Length: 240
Ligand code: ZN
Image (cartoon, rainbow, N blue to C red):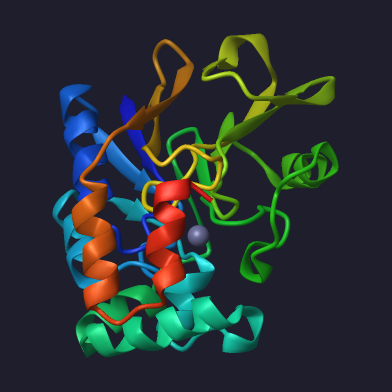
């Protein structure tokens, strides 16, 4: 199986379409998403529809559950709160129900999906350190776990000890288990504006972290036209 892994779309339809186009070119068999379909961007409904058309397996991100009223807004900063309120107005009951019903984790083949961490998925902590990864590995039963949330591509590899990796190619045959963040489709925060995604080929046991350019002019002008905070458009250009 070849999987396309999609994280933190954040209602950026132009970025999502570029990533889906790239994944089609790679002939992926199935699409997996680790959440935050909505929030920050101007196209929450269309992004949900795209994932459903592709029969994507999706787990909940904090923005998804917050938009659906399943998570307190206290958790968020002012910009995020404003975006979540506008996102709610842009979605009908059917889309909100879809977000509310997303599970916090899921397993597909030898892949686990979670948005923040696997050891406490409903609290949406950030997985950034080898210690965080150590705690996740304790809860992990599959060869690989994909996470999102930090919007920064990175991997942690368990091979006796836990090692951080910034490599764009991960060979699972070399390690016991791996946790991989593909980076964000719609709001990268590693100072690279290009949409991030990953491809996992379970036969060769290789994961590649990839980038693709997208129509950022359209995405940012839609954010401004929707009345979302200007900073949410500016940060897309900066990739942070
Ligand atoms: Zn996010």
